[in-house]
Amino acid sequence: MTGATSGIGLELFNKYVEQGYDVIACGRNQEKLTELEPKAKATMRFDVNEPEQIKSAIQSFEGNIDIAILNAGDCRYIDDVVNFDGQLFADVINTNLTSMGFLLQNILPKLSANGQLVLVSSSATILPFSRAQAYGASKAGLDYLANSLRIDLAPKNISVSLVHPGFIKTPLTDRNDFPMPFIISSEEAAIRIYKGVSARKPYIHFPKRLTLLLKLIAWLPDIIWHKIATKGLSK
Ligand SMILES: NC(=O)c1ccc[n+]([C@@H]2O[C@H](COP(=O)([O-])OP(=O)(O)OC[C@H]3O[C@@H](n4cnc5c(N)ncnc54)[C@H](OP(=O)(O)O)[C@@H]3O)[C@@H](O)[C@H]2O)c1
Picture 1 (spheres, rainbow, N blue to C red):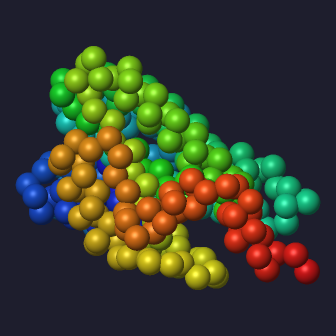
Picture 2 (picture 1 turned 180 degrees about the horizontal axis):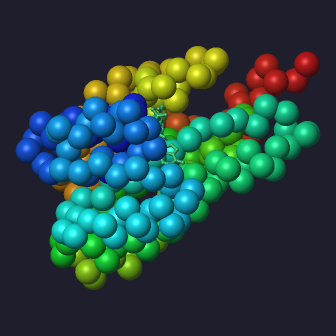
Protein backbone atom coordinates (compact mmCIF):
# COMPACT_ATOMS: atom_id res chain seq x y z
CA MET A 1 0.00 0.00 0.00
CA THR A 2 1.49 3.33 -1.03
CA GLY A 3 0.77 6.47 0.99
CA ALA A 4 0.32 4.39 4.17
CA THR A 5 1.91 7.03 6.39
CA SER A 6 -0.95 9.55 6.45
CA GLY A 7 -4.64 10.25 5.93
CA ILE A 8 -6.68 7.72 3.93
CA GLY A 9 -3.73 5.33 3.49
CA LEU A 10 -2.97 5.25 7.21
CA GLU A 11 -6.60 4.40 8.03
CA LEU A 12 -6.62 1.77 5.29
CA PHE A 13 -3.43 0.30 6.75
CA ASN A 14 -5.13 0.04 10.16
CA LYS A 15 -8.28 -1.47 8.64
CA TYR A 16 -6.43 -4.19 6.70
CA VAL A 17 -4.22 -5.04 9.72
CA GLU A 18 -7.34 -5.25 11.93
CA GLN A 19 -8.86 -7.67 9.39
CA GLY A 20 -5.79 -9.93 9.63
CA TYR A 21 -4.02 -8.99 6.39
CA ASP A 22 -0.23 -8.86 6.08
CA VAL A 23 0.31 -5.29 4.94
CA ILE A 24 3.38 -3.68 3.40
CA ALA A 25 3.30 0.00 4.31
CA CYS A 26 5.02 2.36 1.86
CA GLY A 27 5.80 6.05 2.25
CA ARG A 28 8.63 8.55 2.64
CA ASN A 29 8.15 9.57 6.27
CA GLN A 30 10.63 7.31 8.12
CA GLU A 31 9.35 8.29 11.58
CA LYS A 32 5.82 7.22 10.64
CA LEU A 33 7.05 4.03 8.93
CA THR A 34 8.94 3.10 12.10
CA GLU A 35 5.72 3.58 14.09
CA LEU A 36 3.88 1.22 11.69
CA GLU A 37 6.62 -1.44 11.74
CA PRO A 38 5.24 -3.53 14.65
CA LYS A 39 1.89 -3.99 12.88
CA ALA A 40 3.20 -4.22 9.29
CA LYS A 41 4.50 -7.25 7.41
CA ALA A 42 7.15 -4.87 6.11
CA THR A 43 7.70 -1.18 5.52
CA MET A 44 9.24 0.29 2.39
CA ARG A 45 10.60 3.80 2.14
CA PHE A 46 10.61 5.26 -1.34
CA ASP A 47 9.66 8.41 -3.20
CA VAL A 48 7.21 7.54 -5.98
CA ASN A 49 9.04 10.08 -8.16
CA GLU A 50 12.26 8.03 -7.97
CA PRO A 51 11.98 4.95 -10.24
CA GLU A 52 15.23 3.42 -8.90
CA GLN A 53 13.96 3.67 -5.31
CA ILE A 54 10.66 1.99 -6.31
CA LYS A 55 12.53 -0.78 -8.11
CA SER A 56 14.95 -1.63 -5.31
CA ALA A 57 12.25 -1.49 -2.62
CA ILE A 58 9.75 -3.71 -4.41
CA GLN A 59 12.34 -6.11 -5.79
CA SER A 60 13.68 -6.66 -2.27
CA PHE A 61 10.35 -8.28 -1.40
CA GLU A 62 10.31 -11.96 -2.30
CA GLY A 63 6.65 -12.96 -1.89
CA ASN A 64 3.58 -12.29 -3.99
CA ILE A 65 1.21 -9.36 -3.58
CA ASP A 66 -2.53 -10.11 -3.42
CA ILE A 67 -3.86 -6.55 -3.34
CA ALA A 68 -1.84 -3.51 -4.43
CA ILE A 69 -3.38 -0.25 -3.22
CA LEU A 70 -1.79 2.70 -5.03
CA ASN A 71 -2.94 5.60 -2.93
CA ALA A 72 0.04 8.00 -2.58
CA GLY A 73 -0.73 11.37 -4.06
CA ASP A 74 -0.46 15.11 -3.70
CA CYS A 75 -2.79 18.03 -4.38
CA ARG A 76 -1.50 21.48 -5.27
CA TYR A 77 -3.41 24.28 -6.93
CA ILE A 78 -2.65 26.69 -9.77
CA ASP A 79 -3.28 29.97 -7.95
CA ASP A 80 -2.39 32.35 -10.78
CA VAL A 81 -3.58 30.83 -14.05
CA VAL A 82 -2.09 33.53 -16.27
CA ASN A 83 1.38 33.03 -14.76
CA PHE A 84 0.90 29.28 -15.11
CA ASP A 85 3.34 27.34 -12.92
CA GLY A 86 4.66 24.67 -15.27
CA GLN A 87 6.89 23.13 -12.61
CA LEU A 88 4.00 22.70 -10.18
CA PHE A 89 1.97 21.14 -13.01
CA ALA A 90 4.78 18.69 -13.83
CA ASP A 91 5.36 17.83 -10.15
CA VAL A 92 1.70 16.97 -9.52
CA ILE A 93 1.39 14.97 -12.75
CA ASN A 94 4.59 13.08 -11.88
CA THR A 95 3.53 12.25 -8.32
CA ASN A 96 -0.04 11.29 -9.11
CA LEU A 97 0.24 9.77 -12.58
CA THR A 98 3.72 9.18 -14.03
CA SER A 99 4.76 7.32 -10.88
CA MET A 100 2.01 4.80 -11.53
CA GLY A 101 3.87 3.49 -14.58
CA PHE A 102 6.97 2.66 -12.52
CA LEU A 103 4.88 1.20 -9.69
CA LEU A 104 2.99 -1.02 -12.15
CA GLN A 105 6.22 -2.08 -13.84
CA ASN A 106 7.50 -3.46 -10.55
CA ILE A 107 4.26 -4.63 -8.94
CA LEU A 108 2.44 -6.42 -11.79
CA PRO A 109 5.02 -9.24 -12.07
CA LYS A 110 4.54 -9.89 -8.34
CA LEU A 111 0.75 -9.75 -8.31
CA SER A 112 -0.88 -13.09 -7.42
CA ALA A 113 -3.12 -14.93 -9.87
CA ASN A 114 -6.57 -13.55 -9.00
CA GLY A 115 -4.91 -10.44 -7.54
CA GLN A 116 -6.30 -6.94 -7.25
CA LEU A 117 -5.10 -3.49 -8.20
CA VAL A 118 -6.66 -0.48 -6.47
CA LEU A 119 -5.98 3.02 -7.85
CA VAL A 120 -7.00 5.99 -5.70
CA SER A 121 -8.10 8.81 -7.98
CA SER A 122 -10.62 11.53 -7.04
CA SER A 123 -14.23 12.58 -7.59
CA ALA A 124 -12.67 15.85 -8.82
CA THR A 125 -12.48 14.19 -12.25
CA ILE A 126 -16.28 14.17 -12.58
CA LEU A 127 -16.35 17.93 -13.25
CA PRO A 128 -13.64 20.57 -13.90
CA PHE A 129 -12.86 22.65 -10.79
CA SER A 130 -11.27 26.06 -10.48
CA ARG A 131 -7.47 26.01 -9.80
CA ALA A 132 -7.41 22.19 -10.19
CA GLN A 133 -5.74 22.06 -13.62
CA ALA A 134 -2.78 20.00 -12.34
CA TYR A 135 -4.55 17.81 -9.78
CA GLY A 136 -7.62 17.21 -11.96
CA ALA A 137 -5.56 16.40 -15.06
CA SER A 138 -3.39 13.94 -13.10
CA LYS A 139 -6.40 12.15 -11.64
CA ALA A 140 -8.30 12.15 -14.96
CA GLY A 141 -5.25 10.39 -16.44
CA LEU A 142 -5.40 7.92 -13.58
CA ASP A 143 -9.06 7.19 -14.35
CA TYR A 144 -8.16 6.33 -17.94
CA LEU A 145 -5.22 4.24 -16.80
CA ALA A 146 -7.37 2.21 -14.39
CA ASN A 147 -10.21 1.70 -16.86
CA SER A 148 -7.83 0.65 -19.61
CA LEU A 149 -5.82 -1.66 -17.33
CA ARG A 150 -9.08 -3.35 -16.31
CA ILE A 151 -9.66 -4.47 -19.92
CA ASP A 152 -6.21 -5.98 -20.40
CA LEU A 153 -5.90 -7.52 -16.93
CA ALA A 154 -9.35 -9.18 -16.94
CA PRO A 155 -8.17 -12.23 -18.95
CA LYS A 156 -5.46 -12.70 -16.29
CA ASN A 157 -8.13 -12.62 -13.52
CA ILE A 158 -6.66 -9.46 -12.05
CA SER A 159 -9.38 -6.99 -11.10
CA VAL A 160 -8.89 -3.24 -11.06
CA SER A 161 -10.80 -0.95 -8.67
CA LEU A 162 -10.88 2.77 -9.38
CA VAL A 163 -11.58 4.84 -6.23
CA HIS A 164 -13.24 8.27 -6.34
CA PRO A 165 -13.29 9.75 -2.84
CA GLY A 166 -15.13 13.02 -2.25
CA PHE A 167 -13.74 15.34 0.43
CA ILE A 168 -12.02 13.39 3.21
CA LYS A 169 -10.56 15.02 6.32
CA THR A 170 -6.79 14.41 6.09
CA PRO A 171 -3.60 16.51 6.27
CA LEU A 172 -4.04 17.04 2.51
CA THR A 173 -7.46 18.69 2.83
CA ASP A 174 -6.52 20.47 6.08
CA ARG A 175 -4.57 22.81 3.76
CA ASN A 176 -7.73 23.79 1.83
CA ASP A 177 -9.19 27.24 2.46
CA PHE A 178 -12.56 26.69 0.75
CA PRO A 179 -15.77 24.95 1.82
CA MET A 180 -15.68 21.15 1.38
CA PRO A 181 -19.27 19.91 1.16
CA PHE A 182 -20.16 16.54 2.70
CA ILE A 183 -16.61 16.02 4.06
CA ILE A 184 -16.20 12.67 5.86
CA SER A 185 -13.52 11.19 8.11
CA SER A 186 -10.61 9.13 6.84
CA GLU A 187 -11.88 6.22 9.00
CA GLU A 188 -15.19 6.30 7.09
CA ALA A 189 -13.30 6.53 3.77
CA ALA A 190 -11.19 3.50 4.71
CA ILE A 191 -14.32 1.45 5.51
CA ARG A 192 -15.88 2.35 2.13
CA ILE A 193 -12.70 1.45 0.26
CA TYR A 194 -12.21 -1.78 2.22
CA LYS A 195 -15.78 -2.92 1.52
CA GLY A 196 -15.58 -2.01 -2.18
CA VAL A 197 -12.24 -3.75 -2.66
CA SER A 198 -13.48 -6.86 -0.81
CA ALA A 199 -16.43 -6.99 -3.25
CA ARG A 200 -13.96 -6.49 -6.15
CA LYS A 201 -15.98 -3.48 -7.30
CA PRO A 202 -14.59 -1.84 -10.45
CA TYR A 203 -15.67 1.60 -9.25
CA ILE A 204 -15.80 2.75 -5.63
CA HIS A 205 -17.16 6.25 -4.98
CA PHE A 206 -18.25 8.02 -1.81
CA PRO A 207 -19.91 9.83 -0.16
CA LYS A 208 -22.66 9.20 -2.69
CA ARG A 209 -24.51 12.40 -1.74
CA LEU A 210 -21.57 14.25 -3.29
CA THR A 211 -20.51 11.94 -6.14
CA LEU A 212 -24.07 11.41 -7.42
CA LEU A 213 -24.75 15.15 -7.27
CA LEU A 214 -21.57 15.83 -9.28
CA LYS A 215 -22.60 13.16 -11.81
CA LEU A 216 -26.04 14.70 -12.13
CA ILE A 217 -24.55 18.13 -12.80
CA ALA A 218 -22.07 16.61 -15.28
CA TRP A 219 -25.01 15.15 -17.16
CA LEU A 220 -26.65 18.59 -17.56
CA PRO A 221 -25.58 21.06 -20.30
CA ASP A 222 -21.99 22.31 -19.70
CA ILE A 223 -23.12 25.92 -19.32
CA ILE A 224 -24.81 25.12 -15.99
CA TRP A 225 -21.60 23.90 -14.32
CA HIS A 226 -19.62 26.68 -16.00
CA LYS A 227 -21.92 29.25 -14.35
CA ILE A 228 -21.67 27.57 -10.92
CA ALA A 229 -17.89 27.10 -11.16
CA THR A 230 -17.12 30.65 -12.28
CA LYS A 231 -19.49 32.32 -9.78
CA GLY A 232 -17.42 34.71 -7.68
CA LEU A 233 -14.28 34.39 -9.83
CA SER A 234 -14.82 37.50 -11.95
CA LYS A 235 -14.06 40.75 -10.21
N1 LIG B 1 -8.38 13.80 1.19
C1 LIG B 1 -9.25 13.93 0.19
O1 LIG B 1 -10.26 14.66 0.30
C2 LIG B 1 -9.04 13.18 -1.09
C3 LIG B 1 -10.07 13.23 -2.03
C4 LIG B 1 -9.91 12.55 -3.24
C5 LIG B 1 -8.76 11.82 -3.47
N2 LIG B 1 -7.77 11.79 -2.54
C6 LIG B 1 -6.56 11.02 -2.84
O2 LIG B 1 -6.33 10.10 -1.81
C7 LIG B 1 -4.91 9.84 -1.72
C8 LIG B 1 -4.47 10.01 -0.27
O3 LIG B 1 -4.71 11.37 0.10
P1 LIG B 1 -4.77 11.86 1.62
O4 LIG B 1 -5.84 12.86 1.68
O5 LIG B 1 -4.78 10.69 2.54
O6 LIG B 1 -3.39 12.67 1.68
P2 LIG B 1 -2.22 12.76 2.79
O7 LIG B 1 -2.77 12.63 4.16
O8 LIG B 1 -1.47 13.99 2.42
O9 LIG B 1 -1.33 11.48 2.47
C9 LIG B 1 -0.63 11.39 1.27
C10 LIG B 1 0.20 10.11 1.29
O10 LIG B 1 0.88 10.00 0.02
C11 LIG B 1 2.26 9.84 0.26
N3 LIG B 1 3.05 10.53 -0.75
C12 LIG B 1 2.82 11.76 -1.26
N4 LIG B 1 3.78 12.07 -2.13
C13 LIG B 1 4.64 11.01 -2.17
C14 LIG B 1 5.83 10.72 -2.88
N5 LIG B 1 6.37 11.59 -3.74
N6 LIG B 1 6.42 9.51 -2.68
C15 LIG B 1 5.90 8.62 -1.83
N7 LIG B 1 4.76 8.83 -1.13
C16 LIG B 1 4.16 10.01 -1.29
C17 LIG B 1 2.54 10.45 1.63
O11 LIG B 1 3.66 9.81 2.17
P3 LIG B 1 4.77 10.57 3.08
O12 LIG B 1 4.01 11.56 3.94
O13 LIG B 1 5.39 9.45 3.86
O14 LIG B 1 5.67 11.24 2.13
C18 LIG B 1 1.25 10.12 2.39
O15 LIG B 1 1.33 8.83 2.95
C19 LIG B 1 -4.24 10.81 -2.69
O16 LIG B 1 -3.97 10.14 -3.89
C20 LIG B 1 -5.31 11.88 -2.91
O17 LIG B 1 -5.17 12.52 -4.16
C21 LIG B 1 -7.88 12.46 -1.34
